[in-house]
Each structure stands twice: as C-alpha cells, then as structure tokens.
Length: 290
Image (cartoon, rainbow, N blue to C red):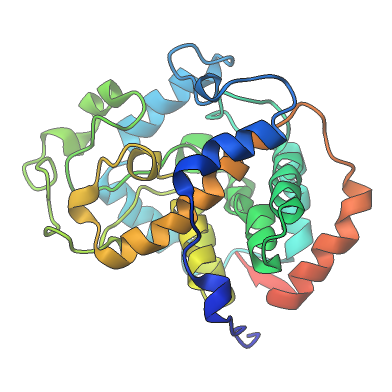
C-alpha cells in the first residue's frame, strides 16, 4: 500500500465565500447559457430515464439492502485494475439519473477536473474532481444503475422530504418499519455522519477504495457529493456534528464544479491524459482492488 501523503493545514482548511461560489462557478464555466435553476430540474427532466430511475432507487434502497451490498462489495475481491483503466470503462457509461447532460462519464470527469485546475486549487483537489465518480465501475459487475448512481441519503431513519421524488419512498419496506421510519431511527441526535449508514452507490464504494490515500476534505467530497438533501437542502442537520459541518464546506465548494462544468462540448482525452496519469501516480497505488 502506498504511504498516505501528508497535507499542510493551509491545503485542507475550509475554504471561504460559499454563498457566492455557486454563482461564480456557474458564470465562468457554463457555456450553453443555462441558468442555475435549469440544473437539477427534476420537475421537467430532459431525459425520460430520470423519474423511473428514482422510482426504483427509492423503492429498493433500504437499510437491509445497503448492508447486503456493503458485505458484497467492500471486501474488494472481484478485480484488480489500473486507475486509468477503471476511468476508461466510464467512457461507456451515461448516467440515467442525471437530468442535465448525456456525455459519458469520463468526459464529465475531465470537465470537472479541468474546471478545478483552472481555478488554481491544490492538485489533490483536481484529482478528486477527476475520480469522484470512479465508483460507477460497480456497473462492471452487473449492478443496475439505481444501485450505483443518483442522489444519496441516510438509511436507518426517516427519509427526508428534501430528497428528489420523495413520494417514491412509500414503496420502500423501511417506510413502514418502526425501527427506521422516525426522525432519528437507529441513530442519535448529532451522532455524526461517520456513524450513519448512507444509501449504497458509487460514492460510498469509492470512499472505501480511496480512504487511505487522499486528505479528509477529498474523502468528504467523494463520499457526500451526491448527498444533495443535506449539502443543498439541509434535511439532515439533526444527524450532523460540528466536524461534519466544517468538512461540508469542502463538499459545497466542490459541488458547483461537479454540476456546472457539464458542457455538451467534449474534452480532448488524449491531450489531458498525461497530466491526470501523473496525478494518479503521485497519490494513488499503481492498481486498485475492486
């Protein structure tokens, strides 16, 4: 295992001006004239897969389902491959949960990394932007997209009405289970997200792959970048502790790059590959276990 890198306090202290950050990144990186309100439009998604995706996701993402998937996948006994090869697989994947764009995932990840890089952030932040969706390689193993992508949320407690399409949770077995359908469920007030089980998907999977290699802010970005019902809607404040709130400043800093760097114009992979391969060599092992 590669020795974990050390990071200075200057590099990992929370960043500032979160309130203005969305608008700033949107203005600088959106090329098609879309406004902020036109992103994540689940009332009128551009793609007809989105609503059906969330119907399946909300029906089946129960506490027991997540425990089963954690047991199944977090032993990392299925495959060993180079990081770039894993990223290259994403060149075949279009995210059915994304209402904004139909580019494959590798192109989206390069757009995200390049937007972060252009703003002069530390190289570990750039790398995080580039790999943040790499957990979608779960699709290599025949997993349906509703168990890989989409917004994430806690399981083991009541589903917030701040989650997209909350009406679909009515068919989830936990919705009527007294152990799980109260505000705190199996958790306690301000218990901290480290003690909370999240819905299963690429975020959680990649976090466990990367947790020995990247600084804590990067790991929060990876693990919670799809947790919109908290970092955008604040639907789970009652489970957060002060450390979570500090780290979520980084998640909120990252989110506009993930969301607003999406453009129909694809990046030139061959031109960017050497730079990102260099970042991979700097921070990650030569191969990863999946």
